[in-house]
Length: 152
Ligand SMILES: [Zn+2]
Ligand SMILES: [Zn+2]
Image 1 (cartoon, rainbow, N blue to C red):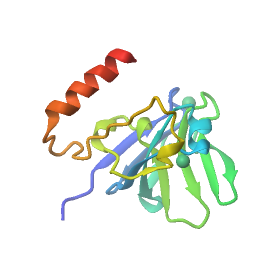
Image 2 (cartoon, rainbow, N blue to C red):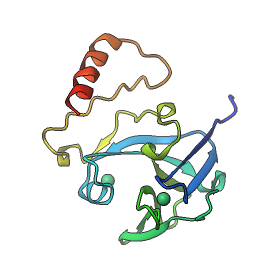
Image 3 (cartoon, rainbow, N blue to C red):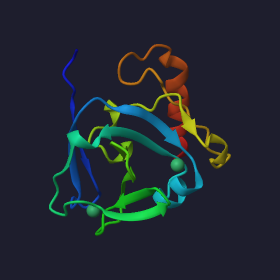
Image 4 (tube, rainbow, N blue to C red):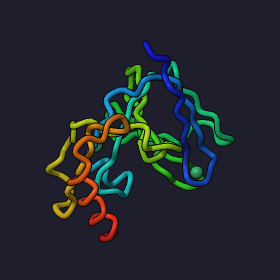
């Protein structure tokens, strides 16, 4: 088995930093109302890692945790407000926002898109599920991607 990679990331201001050496688990998109309100983004890309392999390394230590539902707390930087993580009570994994990774290219969301119908209707997410490994039928996708970039 290949050795797991190390992933690093953090918030906008650098107070909150993390490092994890583990295989990514269940990378997916979510457009639920809570993810949208919490992040300010139309959709959040998530990935999970085992808590045992994960550590907070920035000067700010752990993020500020807000209990967003009965069993879930969401973590933001107390200084700059960046959305970083979600932790479920009694669960062995931490969920990390893929956008907070230093190298978000390394982890692509899988086909799972939770609460897809809750997304704003102008938002048509196109995910290359082949991820960073093989970009097969890239012609169509890259054309769409160009359009998307031009519109943003
Ligand atoms: Zn910060
Ligand atoms: Zn969500």
